[in-house]
Length: 430
Ligand code: AMP
Ligand code: GLY
Image (cartoon, rainbow, N blue to C red):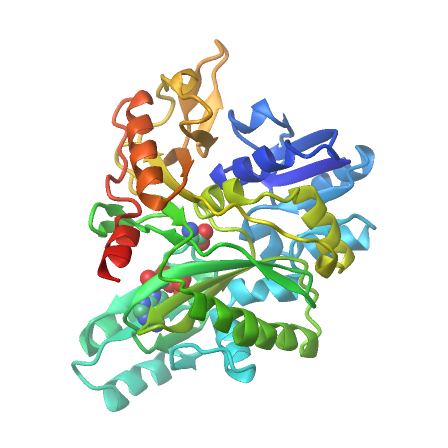
């Protein structure tokens, strides 16, 4: 089989690393990819939203399956486009991707199909939203203000009182800080608790859940500083207890599947469910229509089943026919970022030590790298590399990954030192 993977980050490297272990696959292409991906796949210089060129490439090269990494092409309808050309593709339809691309769509879906979520109110107009805050919102009550559309993870503003909410409303709907993502707005009840991400494979009728993961979004230790795309992750997350997983398997996911069927949503791919767990009760904060980054870099190394098999069955609508198995070990990943990230940072800095990391210490997934003409690997993004270690338990995986990280060096490299400490705290509390 031949695969085309779309995307260029650590997530796509993890997907390709796993696909490359499949005996069924003879060739993998990646558009556009990065320097690490180039070790396992042939890079194709086509942008992720150039559907005409991607489909032409897939047809000419007799690609059996295209696997979409990021949300943007899904939200733009790549799946519908490929299907119209008779091409098989792993990823939800445009309507399915709206579960991520429109927060109001997702919230209304949750309300309609009994998926537990924070209370909310949506507005299409600035004046009505402002009136609501001024007249119906308690001056000192906390609220989460969200832009409706895709905003690269930035359109969510946590407000401690009405004044901050009015600021956020202005930023989103008047200043248009997130562009057209701010055409609609949501005010949401501020939930307390711990977050966990539960991802599922689904063909729209059947589903299979993956080990729960936890991301670390803030740039600094102890969850301080600015938000990032994610600075590290671990799986399985102990906050997702047996009871919680049972609830996801027996109530939440069946309700979601019912919704997909009733709404005629063609959904063949991954549904990422971001939960807030408050006193053991899960509330859905958000849906993503794809694998998470860096969650994938800890989930995929625990997957024992051939990913190509899962893709085939998902696309065929026979996900119930594949037995998906997971390792009982734990995985921890640490993101090595460029100095300054998530704000301005330098690029093109040489990276050393990549060959000093042994496979049983950590897998290196490239996120933002490129190969220079002289063969050296250079930094080319904010998140540069992701190191994942797998061990018998979380504590051993943490020790292993942090012993390995110092082998890698580039000027102004920074990373969080406390990835997965929350898991240890949780376990110790019990
Ligand atoms: P979202 O993109 O909707 O998941 O929001 C991004 C982040 O904002 C989440 O991962 C949470 O940390 C936080 N967040 C979003 N909604 C809420 C909420 N209702 N209560 C508390 N925190 C939230
Ligand atoms: N790590 C969060 C995301 O992929 O959306």
